[in-house]
Each structure stands twice: as C-alpha cells, then as structure tokens.
Length: 96
Image (cartoon, rainbow, N blue to C red):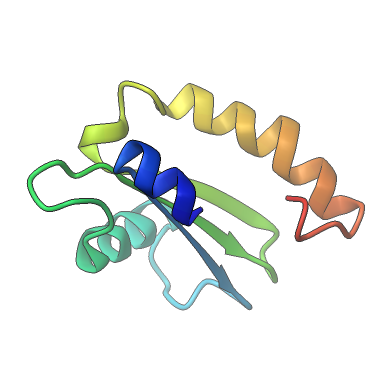
C-alpha cells in the first residue's frame, strides 16, 4: 500500500473491528470515523477506508470526496461482493 500511495498520492486504510462499536448505522459510523481520521492528503480528501466488522459480517468502503469519481458506491459494492466477501468466506482474510 505504501507504493500505491507514493505512485498515486491516494491513501487506503484497512480498519478491522471485532464488532461495530456503536449503536448507529454502519454508514453513519464509518463516515464519522473516516472524517475524524482524515485519511488522504489535506485539501485533496483522496483517502479510502475499508471497514470490516467481523461479528456482524459487514464490510464497507468509505471514500473521501477526492476519490468518489474513481471509487463510487457502485464500484465499492462490487469490490466487496466480488472480491472481499468470497475470500473472507473462504478464510483468506489476507487475500481479501
């Protein structure tokens, strides 16, 4: 991931939680946390966070505004459904 950041200036963070640590929705929680962490370069907002909540079996990719053109919600959904979930189900967490 470090090479990806050097090549593109975009930042990707993976956050794995045992469970969703809030009573709020996954969407609300991930937006608040990603904004608080400030992933991406200042002024470019070009970061993305992959959230995994293991107990709930939920995944979400939260993108900054600077990456929404290349990682819109539809693409994030396809990544989760076609790439991450099959690998997680097979126990290949590192591959996911």
